[in-house]
Image (cartoon, one colour):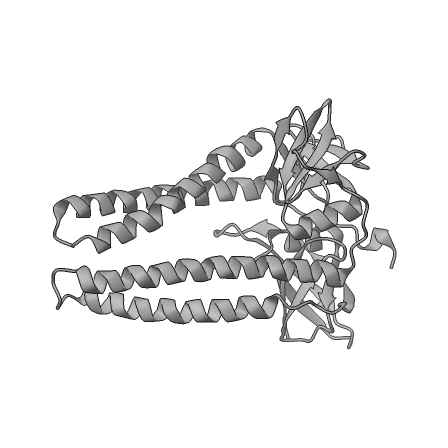
Length: 335
């Protein structure tokens, strides 16, 4: 399969980063979304503190609100202040392509790339490390960088030396089956994290049932129901994570041509695309992309190509991606 046919979306050379499809709209939408989350979580934390001092709702309810919403507020506040906002200010400048990556080294999840007499240290999950080792290029703008086909910017750190204990990042081709396995294992780790959060929520809910002063309150019944749902969710998430850790066979890709307009960003910050394609059986259908992977729809709209795992069928949802890239997500075919 020729490389130019599977090339993913990359920033245009020599022009401002604002010309990269979807990038500015995505940063603007995420800034609003994250800002709203930070404000809302902060208000809930303040409510929890107020309830704690009022003493009318016991200890468990305010502790639940403070313990859950404080990390949410801090995390999205950090992403907003250290990620979206400063990156948005740099979009008037062009990305700089760093290819070859001669001298690049890796220590665990951290990759150190030589850059203008310094080292850009970036933290990458396993699928992106595998892609970087195979493709040997990144696009840099200030402390931010993009990998080919990946539209979401990541932030690195400039240092005078690479991370201690690093070893050379050797060129290493990666098969689609290996990339899919790494992606599934990464998702499995997220499911396990969600299972842990659900388990903690169940424990807090049971604490509320025991601690709440008014035993006849509807809140006690709601807390019992929430505890049961969280326990079920924990079991389901753990089972899903275990299933997803299994190695994936080498996938069979089906390439489709797609006619669509540019990708857009919806109210929830997801990149979406709607177009038309012709299935292998000759049927022309509408295709929609937009889900967990923000890069998939942008790649389809920018390249006019859709790569589906397996054989696509009208009226079904299929898993799609970009061969050689850590980009996977769902697409929906109309009838």
